[in-house]
Length: 149
Image (cartoon, rainbow, N blue to C red; front, side, top):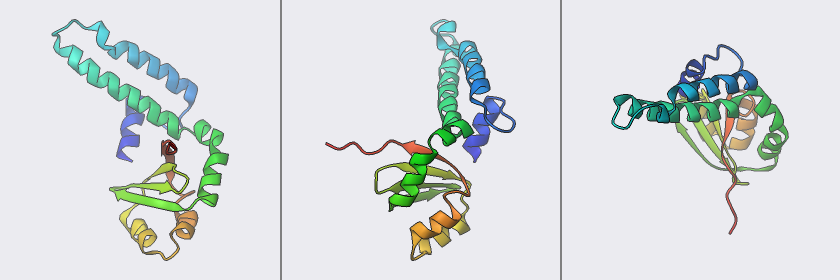
């Protein structure tokens, strides 16, 4: 949740993410912090390189959790959580990352330790996740499917 709030603050997003407004803000920030605006050896150039990287990462992150993006990908998400089992998972802080048997990985934000312990100790983890995690927490697809050789 810290990362979500940090990027929302960077892009001045108060409530719901609107892709059109986000894109406009993104373009303005990129123009303002583009490293080519500064001379070589200028201390601001290094700061601009870091800031521009942060802006790009933040933009892609916010687009991935935007309601429009989630709506567009809802059928694929529902297919994954209903038809594919859980292959692996990791919990760090308030972030739960679940990798499914079809190779897709989703990040769930705000999953506290107690919920994770219940999930981890559940004899039917997929069933628990369907009831308590999948549609209860903010999520995003974090990695593409594994490539087959």
